[in-house]
Length: 406
Image (cartoon, rainbow, N blue to C red; front, top):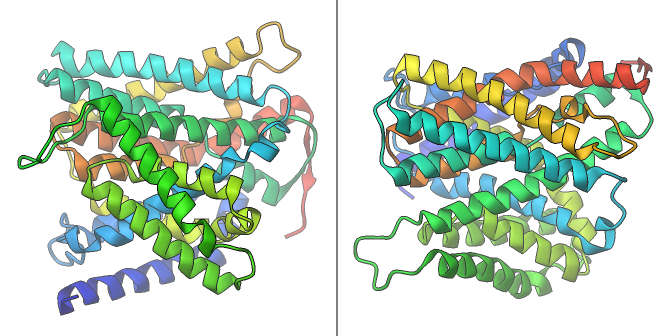
């Protein structure tokens, strides 16, 4: 590693460490008081460190930091793969799977159709190629379908919450994350970026088999190294190595590291003796990895044309809301459940950021620039409003208790 790369890595660690301490002692208290999900400050930090600010330019060349980005993105994929635990999947709260599927399918279809028309109609932006339009629309649909549990965590840190709504929302959000990550990974197979000197070209189904096969094979390969008798630090270091290897293999083949690690996580949680301990380690380190993703998300941002980006962002937020509302209504059709559970699934979370970064690093083009900007803007907007919308839902459901002591 050359001195310049070492300096950038050290600078990143210093900034993220300082930002994490700021979050722990200051922003987390503001988050609890104002009911917002923190994230904007880290995206802004990434923009300041990225190529857009020539006075700093700590991340002017992100190529040497790809292993760090791959590790952070893969961490999110592996953690969500742990949700595919067969033993606990049958114990999902009643209606959670129905809510997740309704939310994902309806929201995804609404957004993909609207985004495709936006990129090809020529009304606001110059029409782009069919391939780029479908790819960008598909990624926007996956990001729209995600429903974060972070607003739930914010609410539960401030209030005493009981009843049946929160467990349903939490499980539905996790299932929705898994479905969105799987579809996102398949998009990389359908719109695979073949290398110019590739010895052979595979079809989308073959690339999908390769991606799933890599995750499954690595899960079985690394299973003996996670037996459950190692220390927490040893398990953490082992996971760093495993995720970096899996993500690196995915990047090398221009596949989604999120899909590879999703399959890897599903294999480990169902076959490794230390499945529950692995999941606990991943959950305890989820927040620092999410902060790294937010910083890099800001560093990778390049401002597109203003008017197309603003109109696309407003349209995306509106259509996403309508899609979640309709999906929630359909999920509650002829069922004894609330028809407005979409109000608890408005957040985005680290899964959306991980998908956006993976998309940005592999693909390029005007539609990609706009889609990436729309995703970041939607993340910031919903991080600010999602906890308050969720609180209103819990108040209406009669499940919000008194504030907890500080």
